[in-house]
Amino acid sequence: MHISLAILLFSLLLFASSSSQQQEDNELNVRRIMKDMAIIPDILKEPPKQLLKMMYENSLDIAEGKTYTPTELKFQPKLEWDADGETFYTIVMVSPDAPSRENPMYRSWLHWLVVNVPGKDVMRGQTISEYYGPLPPKDSGLLRYICLVYQQSDKLDFEEKRIELNNAEGHSNFDVEKFIDKYDMEQMPVAGNIFEAKWDEFVPELMKTLYNVSE
Image (cartoon, rainbow, N blue to C red; front, side, top):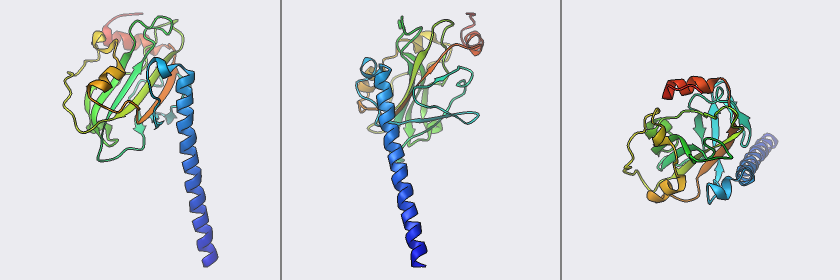
């Protein structure tokens, strides 16, 4: 009886230690990758505190720094991070490479913005810009995309009006840190993830739907 209890306690401690080590490894990895991919310090001053888990349909989990296609990322992902249920958060996803990494004249292009998110219940947040996935132009190469979570001081009144998906001007040249400073959020993101995407056949379809233009 005592031996079985001891084995159970040892197993639980071993599992907790393993989970803690995995979380620490993930945090260090996402910080390193953001520096390696020049997000730090070009776009952000501070790396995220922890890895933001992004889960797309068909059981696609974003591995930080990896490459995906617009087809794989066309629907809003589920997000997971170590959130406080009594705290409000802002979620923002941008591409600093619009229209290309060599000529980022629209840096950064806003792909998703939800504020006043209670805990990690994104659906109950205030959507300023609905999610739409990567739109890398043909022959633009690999473009970087970052998704970040910031902690708010409280539930806030945001001046920004809702940006319609077909409003290209409203999505271009979005300055993440300027927005964060405006509402006195912590400079260091609570969580974040980064990936790359390249053109595929879904891009012309989305461009036609959003802007009624063909590539």
